[in-house]
Image 1 (cartoon, rainbow, N blue to C red):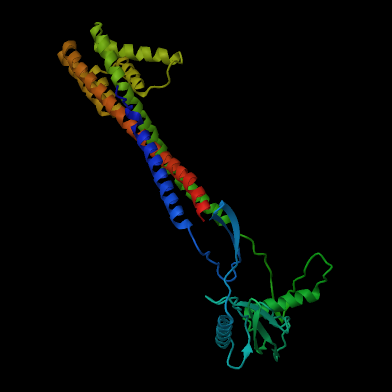
Image 2: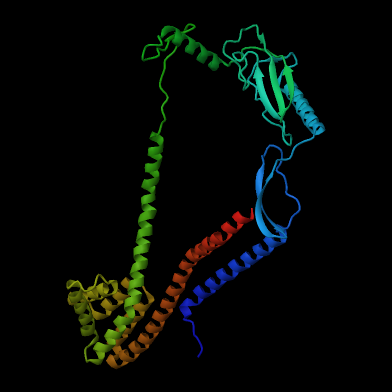
Length: 407
C-alpha cells in the first residue's frame, strides 16, 4: 500500500525535512570539529591586561578519566619589552606636546589628553600641580591671571608595576574668548554680583559695560512641527481616501466575481422552469431582498445591481437599455457578457439564451476554480515568511547551545 501525501502538505513536509537535515548536518559537523580540536598539549594565554581564565580539561590515566580545572594566567611581557613600550609611549607624548603647545610653551586652549596608544599596553595617568589652573582632564581654569601661570603637566606611564614619568612645564593663559563668550562671562559675573545666593531667583543685569541688554527665554519651539504634521496629515487624507476607495472597489469586484456563477445557474434554472428573462431577473431580485430583510445574508453588490435594473424597468426604462446599464455599472467583463446575452435574448428568444447561458455557466465554473487556485497560492506565499522565521528560530535553538559549549 503506497502512502499518498496530500498536495497541500507537500511544502510543509519539504520544509520540515530541510530543517531536520540542516540541523543534523550542523550538529554532526560541530561534533566532528569539537572532537578533532579537543586534544591539546598547551593552553593559550590571554593578552596582557585581559586577566586569567579557567579551562576544564578531561584527563585520561591508568585509573580512568577525570575532569579538572586549570587556571591560565594572562601573558606577561619581558623587562626589555616593557622598557620598549614605555619609551614608545614617552616619544608619542613628546610629539603630541609639540603639536598641541605653541613654540613659546604657552597654552591658551583646553587640551585633549590622550588616554592610550594603539598597540601599546601602557596606561596613561595624568595629573597637574595646579588643578585650578589646568585640570587633570586638560581643561583650563577660570581664575588664570592675565600674565599667565606656569604649571607642571605630568603623565605617569604604567605597565604592571613598571612606571615611567613624563613631565612638561607649560605656561597657561586665560583662553581667548570671542565677543559673545566675553559678553556671556561679563553677564554671569554681573548677575552673581547683584544677586544673593539665598534668593530664589538670579537677577540679570540690564546694562553691562554701557550696553543695554534685553533677555528672552529660549524654549523648544514645537509649533512648526505641529504645523508640518497637520499639513502632512491634511494632504495625506486624499491619497488615503483614494486608497480606501480602491480597496472597497477591489472588494466589490471580488464579491461580484464570486456571485456570478450562482446568478447564471439561477437564471438557467428559472428559464427552464418557464419564466421569461425579465421575470427571472425579478425573481432573483425579490429573493435577494427577502433574504436580506431576514438578515440571512449581507449586502451583495451583484444582486444590488440586479435590483436597480428591475427598478429601472418598473419605471419605464426599456429592457434593452436596462440590461446595457447593468453591464456598464458592474464594470466586470463577466457581467458585460451577461448584458450582451440578455440583449440578444430580446431578439432570438429563450431557446438560444439557454444554450448561451449554459456555456457561460461552464466558463464561470472554470474561472471560479482558477481563482480558487490563485487564492491558495497567495495564501501559501503569505505563509512563507512565518515559515522562514520558524526555520531561523529552530537554527538559533540548535546553534546557540552548541556555540556556548564550544567557546
